[in-house]
Length: 249
Image (spheres, rainbow, N blue to C red):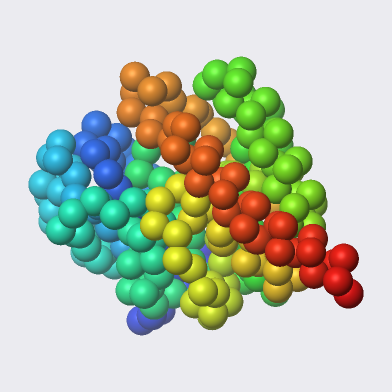
């Protein structure tokens, strides 16, 4: 385990956690984040949860803040706007040199942070994506894995990318680069929009294998048909324009 400047005044890493109705999972996630040995700030954006998530977050902040090298910001939205909007709120509040997006469930393990952030701090790249399938992980349903593969192939073709896992929940960025992107998607289309914006810039995205423990819909998994449609809409918006520009030039 690496340790980066744990005594620094300003955080090196900003971890943005969008949360919507994750009361049953949020304790374990935030505990693991606090244990990661890097000077960081934790920005949790509650997207108008109605299951007691906000109350749990307030209690967790009291318990952990000051007991570790992790600064806290809790932000509660007045009504539900979607993952993309919540992440943008977190980006605006971030003070770290590197920004990492962490889902508020137990599918992704914060123990992977050192592997994810090391290439950026080493100057090898400005963007790292966690590859869920690089460690032999399996999707919760077979159609999720094949569907993800089909969307990845489609997205790569339309956007000009060469990624193995376009729709991973683990995305890490140089903060200055991230703030330079014009992002507008409020819901699950955000993940596709940010990849499209990076591909348009010609940014090199490094993939790092991460552990992945998928949950079922009964356990609270939220992405569904609307997320699929948002993804396809964003890919078509950016990709068709790219293809037309290639033809015209």
